[in-house]
Length: 129
Image 1 (spheres, rainbow, N blue to C red):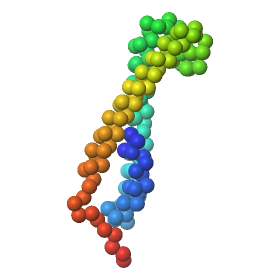
Image 2: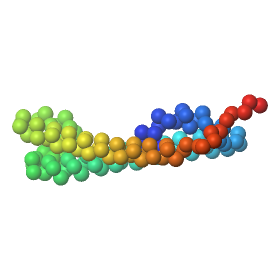
Image 3: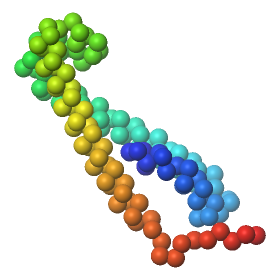
């Protein structure tokens, strides 16, 4: 969860009473919500690290250390650079975003595999009381 699996939260909440008993419902809801938040936090950290590492390693040959510091503090500072340097800096950011997208696509693939493991041969049924 958390790597884009938050969209399945409503399905998990609907299935929870079927899988868990009434006495464990609060524990299940808390666990699902906590794992979702934790996954989102980890995902954000991974994406930020990918972009920062890519930008710093590729822009050191384009920008001076002072310019690099300003650009990494705020991307609005790109507008203060020469037009040719602006294009080069934007290309570096584009490549960094592409790397982030590839990482998230890998997590989506892992999510599909984990989803496949949830399939039951004899699906559970709701029996009216």
